[in-house]
Length: 356
Image (cartoon, rainbow, N blue to C red; front, top):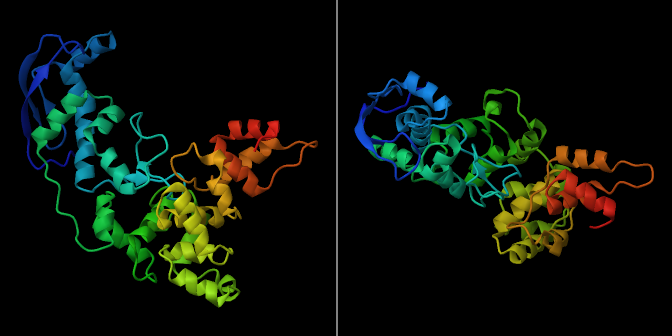
């Protein structure tokens, strides 16, 4: 078992039951959790596990096998020691805890701060680890681990609320040395574009090409020819926009205007920063989507304006539609179908029926 990270043994009185029924008789006894995660109880836990495999139940088995690992995760999250506590599956349009459960919003959360707050909540951890919610809350209360005071300066202050440690932010800043100042949106964009943190060590990245493009944009190395062709007046309007600079570097050479962000933001009742992030995810993947298409009635069942589907999903949809008798729609049309219908199978069925 991993080090539990408690600086002291924790002793508590546990209401122990031999059935999950809340009305069952309860025997309270002392349990001690050592800093290394080992647990001292009055039971022979090996024998109790055999009994549980035959259909029995004991609260202390639940505590040792599921409750202590859940407490371990909670402590690491509170102390900001989980390396990647939140992830995005759509380039930052929505966020989820790194380990999801049935309690999570299936559409994700608009803000990574909300995703982190949900991911560290006892209700979420009890669902993920399969432990009784009241038992986990009892362990957390007994552990009494205070949350450290977070940084007060940006971008570390906001990123702390997202579950990221200042040490991780410093490593990211050192990796992207030529970007100054590095904003919280920049850091979150890098985390959304990568599937792990191996790129900080120069290792393989699950989505290396997309992350590479983002790093190039942040470091100001790309789109120079596109910027040269941009009308000076349009460039000036983008300069006064509230959109993140990395998003402007994608949208401006692609021919988009600040008014496109206003359209998306007003249609979905979101900020222009969110609108810029969404539209940049489409442009960054090579889709020249009409902003009006992102505001159409076919997407109104969604809670948020959809980010661009993954290129892998678009490739699978193209294969599913390949037929000598039917022309395959454009990449952008395929991506919009995926955004509307949610899965490759549903999008393929809709396109085969001739529905948008």
